[in-house]
Length: 184
Image (tube, rainbow, N blue to C red; front, side, top):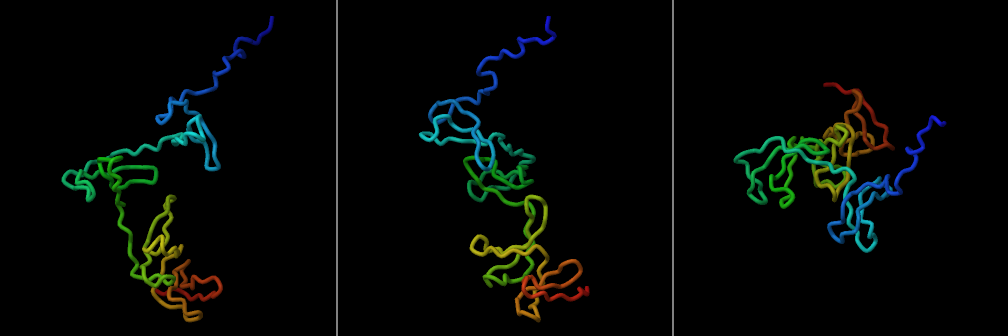
């Protein structure tokens, strides 16, 4: 007599398949598909039907409705919401209205962008919480600094902005190399 229960090894051919429902566009079964950016749920009728959705829906939680504060696009109430990138202000009539606004206002440094010479460098935060400074004319201008800009021209190369880095004033141009001690 064997100590192994062989009935555990006899599974139905479809035991590992999950039922993700039917495609809302063509009624074919939905299945897990893979791409270079990771797994997702897609229609089994691809390429005739291109329906897809994320494997894990990133739900947005409504934290507080802002009574009396109206959406500038549809006049519904706005609400404080929490999504995958943090808190934001959004319309309560989502998905019919897509209005969103940042809770934290971007800090304007009053430093003119040295690349396009039209915009201002503005403090922003990436999705990991690290601060950087970018031109407010993005996406037309993609100038970015990782350190706080100073509205002063470089005495060596003439670049119109210097940066404050590790207690020093430096030129952001890699070919320049200008540095001086920061005195506050």
